[in-house]
Length: 242
Image 1 (spheres, helix red, strand yellow):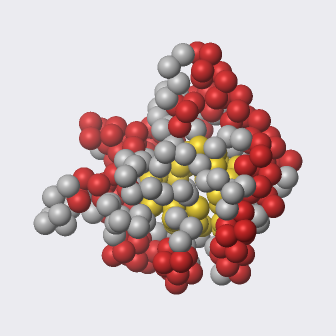
Image 2: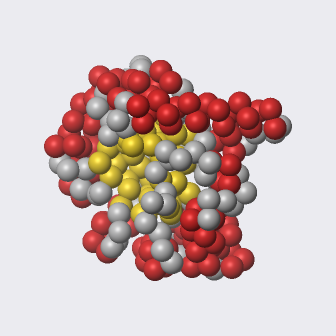
């Protein structure tokens, strides 16, 4: 069984929001194209400041997506309410800071375990698969399991941004160890952040990774080859194991 590809379409909405007066490019159309190209899942992050994906987008995506909708969201009362109302296939709880350009790190599950456990329970009661976005850290994996997560998505940013082979090796081993620890605890294990057509290849060596959520590199590639081709190229890589 091949790992799933979740295509994050936030950056399509970012391009639209750069000119707030225009209705294009539409992330809903992007989701349709990505699914037609073979994506297994569509991932979006509804941020509190609505810098890219809008409530309208999320509602239409929930109504039209034929595969799976994965909602990345902060663990706040308002976001939990939206998730419980729309009932996406999955909700990935992520940390969120207004000043950051993109998500800078994983959840501190150890520090916020009680609050995250309450949210995880609400999600599971609503039939929503709940995942925690965490740094590759064994203590955070264990805390995620205790808090009731069904899955962990391992933050691959430091691996993807490594400036040397030694740094890359160290970060890869941390990811590998976290994935193995998660599997032993019965968690589903995913990966995301900064993954592109080159650094994906080594990650594919980790057999227990079930899902990759990839956005920026696919949308950037789409500028030159089109979105359908960009998604298909990523799928070929995943299915060829690099």
